[in-house]
Image 1 (cartoon, rainbow, N blue to C red):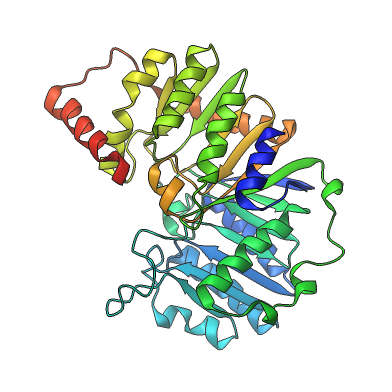
Image 2: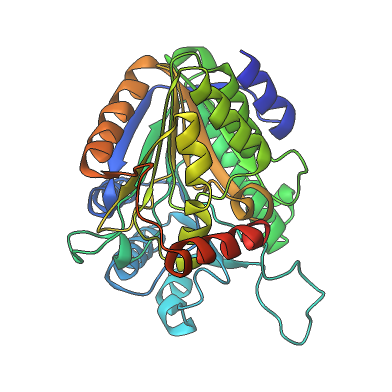
Length: 386
């Protein structure tokens, strides 16, 4: 398809397939599945996270990694230096003592400000690879803020577990990030262990799956580009769920054109995100979208952290990228594009329930000048910097 060709041309990652894709809703279910899978690891565990906090969720995962490392499993943990800044050496000591390797992505060095790229260029990816055969990715970080079993106000979020040929591409993404951040030479890696020969081939999986990566190392803005291209290709519906909605001109034109053309275009955002400024910026676009026929919903009281997109009945994109300039241009992001009617239908059922639980935004809503219009206008002016 055209989408697959665009993805391959901009990332270098070929179209692939999955034998299994399981949607994981919220942190509690994700952490249970993740810990169970980690306990079965026999060769290696690769983890890359933006936020890894030293709380209950983080300690449980750390201890699981320590147990596997002591059993002889090779553990590599790549953490963003800003997102995971709450972690201290004492927390990581058991991991390192057990033989695990921990590397920081773009560590802050106050005395060497020009040695690494700036503060904004973070790895926002959430990725776990188990023995090169199973993977977890999506929007969920490692923090109690995403565990609804521990906090009533935990984020609402979505993750996925994958098996099949596509894990080979996800493994490549991790290894490239690890080599970049650690400086470890490629010849030290055991190719046969990282990419087992007995893995399913591309033709073995019935679910079309393609890895989408983007970041400041590429000018193609792959994840942004694929969203816009999929909107243009859609013929029936476009559903977008995002915690941060700050669209560029191309995306805004695509969404409004789809709605003006009679498609079922829906947007779900938090009633109030964890950034007041981003919430105001998002609302500054509502009038134009509503006038075009886009149906907008605000989710609450829990913070919506899900990043999901559906076009028609056979394409979805789910991952770490928000619908804003920071995710599309500055952060290193990872999303999955799936082409499978069953998986899209299952995701659509989940999102339908979210739309039903949210409050529709009305065209005739009350908007006071100083309380609403002025803050929104100011945030709109600053939106390219968000």
